[in-house]
Image (cartoon, rainbow, N blue to C red; front, side, top):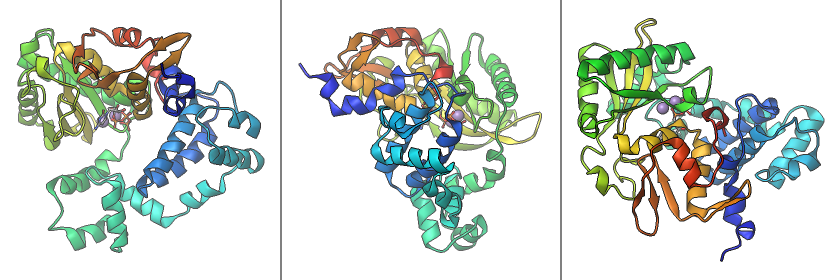
Length: 370
Ligand code: CTP
Ligand code: MN
Ligand code: MN
């Protein structure tokens, strides 16, 4: 038997699903400064460093009071020595020099601007910066003809996509989707997920999971829905389109994610969606799930990204939470929870079922802001 307490993986992974991460927490300014450094590390391709900041940030979000001393910070699992020293500096001076440096770095400002365009990742952003481009005009002048269609769309939609959405904006779009779905058939269920479900007031996009009690009704739904949205003038841009479970038999879905799809086996389309009341193009991510995968789809698309990371690690390695031991040996994906040994899917009806199965206490979506 493996000693979980001594397992370094467990020591580093378990807490995002065990701790509570409310939007309103006690260390906001500190988290803001560390987030800036985390973002810079991410854009500079320093994945390991970025991850250690994200872990510390999650730990601070869940910390039940304002941190008052370095000693206190050092004791928190997830906060390493280096970040603890930054916290000491913050407590002493009110700022973190490394965060100030990032905030004033024109390289960071420009590469993060590039990387916020849909279809442009950190590698392309750094590449453009390295070629001497300092604005989108520079990029278009030099590379206009060679850019992929997705990046062209990303640049076209950028002025709209950078405008944040309120909860009302999300709700308006969900109502439109309900109406369009009713035009296809009765009985569709639509669940707004992502940051909206976690209670965020301000959202980058609108993510929805759509299902139907009859499994057959979700087959080919993505095609029908996107076609209807185009025909009715809501969608002009499709940034990503991928059919998943429509191709594979749901019962055949295995542990491995689709390589081409890169994330999961669910059918999904990322669209530019013209919001009626404002005329602004919003990013709307449509995820279609057959009823049998719905619980996993909703859990997997609610996030946050760091919560999902913790969840996957918990499934794989197990851990101890509130006195209950979970042995691990499972794989979580938005298209199912799998036994790693047999590759068989565990049948779960609801999110609550999944938490129970994993021996985790229920975490309200608003506490998943890790
Ligand atoms: N997700 C995923 N695979 C992707 C993109 C997203 O599994 N390729 C899941 C993640 O769990 C993520 C959630 O969907 O947390 C929502 O993603 P996203 O819209 O990017 O982030 P939000 O948390 O909703 O934040 P924002 O307001 O910026 O949209
Ligand atoms: Mn989102
Ligand atoms: Mn999204």
